[in-house]
Image 1 (spheres, rainbow, N blue to C red):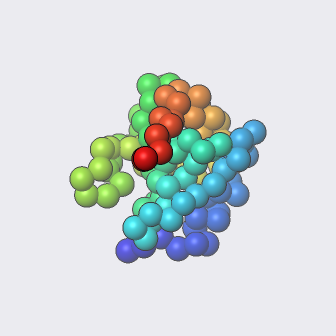
Image 2 (image 1 turned 90 degrees about the vertical axis):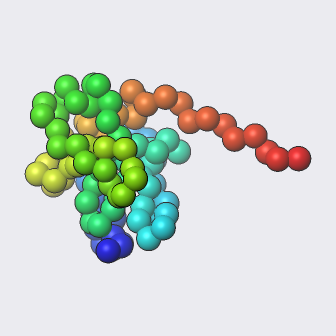
Length: 108
């Protein structure tokens, strides 16, 4: 089941970040980015955040599941998705602890 735009809009509105929050449609689902750095996905109207050690400390006991078949486990955010302050803090912690995006070289 593909995620619907209303849910995607709700999630992005919940995240109060100093960076630019954006989404990109991917195979009927959505990648979610802060300043161009992908930090999670929205699949089946569920938010999954990339796992980091600092994110795990912040959450405490996260639920970890793959967002789709063949994916690595991510933090499934359900209970606190409506808590804008908490979700924004988690996104900031996650983005700050992810490696910088690799710059793709142009093919000649």
